[in-house]
Amino acid sequence: MRLLLRIGGVVVENPVALAPMAGVTDSIFRRICKAMGAGLVVTEMVSSKGLLHNNHRSAELLAFTDQERPIAIQIFGSDPEIMGKAAKQISALEPDIVDINMGCPTPKIVKNGDGAALMRDPDLAARVVESVAANVSCPVTVKLRRGWDAASPPAAKIAPLLEKAGAQGFTVHGRYREQFYRGKADWECIAEVKAAVNVPVWGNGDVDSPDAALKMMEQTGCDGVMIGRAALGNPWIFREVTYYLRYGDYLPKPSLRERMDLALAHLQEEASVVGEVDGVKRMRSQLAWYTKGFPGAAAVRQRLNQAVTVAEVREILASCLKLEEI
Ligand SMILES: Cc1cc2nc3c(=O)[nH]c(=O)nc-3n(C[C@H](O)[C@H](O)[C@H](O)COP(=O)(O)O)c2cc1C
Image 1 (cartoon, protein in one colour):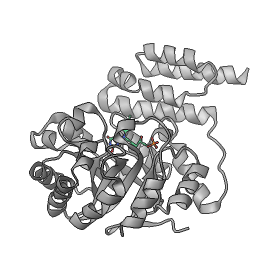
Image 2: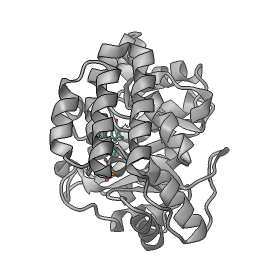
Image 3: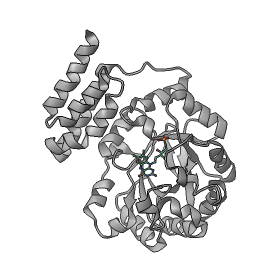
Image 4: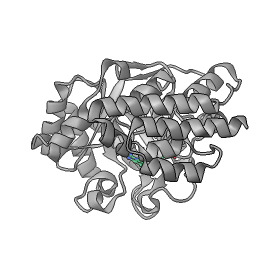
């Protein structure tokens, strides 16, 4: 199996990417996943309109470090002119890839015609791609869903139009917009897109283990897998999948101590950026994910939700380790 991917001129060494997840995949988490072997990381989605208004939140979402390269910045919006201007602005940051979000199902986004709503209007979607591609020198990719719903144009019909408009790669999440994140992802639509275009395709949806990653690649012919929810509290998955694809063997699961150490290191990084109290608050869901499966996990989560300082979090996590040793 070919493990190296080329998206335009960008070389991606491992065919395993971290999916964009709003509220989760900030620069700190992306660096952690990168260190674990993620071949590509993607920012949280950034509003093209917010960018043009010099929105403070947008600037925060755009920040990345060289350690994260190759990195894709993901933008959303449906006005070709605004998307083009936003892309031009982003160019100054020299991302490796600009990715266009055509998959977000949230009512707040689709009611403006953005995100997955673009899949209902392939001509407009193509104009958006054209405008973004005309304003950047790096490759442009698009993240699609299976379609808006079963009655709307499927991803495999839309992707070739977007390729013609300048898209140099795709991610396909095998669910309709209607499904949000429910039900099992359909992988057949990934195979259909792969067969319909001449550029790399990331398969996405329900990859939660090395076996699932290999199965998706074999079943669909996709060039790489993109992992979202299975990386929450579990960035080791990138190491495990990469190792399995390379050597056909499994790495041991991280120990409780390793998970605790990484959770704390992650928290400390967060606290150093936003301050201790905000850092602990922001990390609540991440800490809950890191401690999934810990002895007494539900009670631990409750205590973590009340913690205010890093020292308190450390003490709560350390008590889990002691429990395991008993
Ligand atoms: C909390 C959360 C936030 C997400 N935010 C984004 C986003 O900003 N942009 C995007 O294209 N997809 C977003 N997604 C979708 C994921 O990138 C991915 O397509 C989806 O979770 C399916 O992959 P998985 O089964 O590996 O989780 C988000 C998903 C979740 C769970």
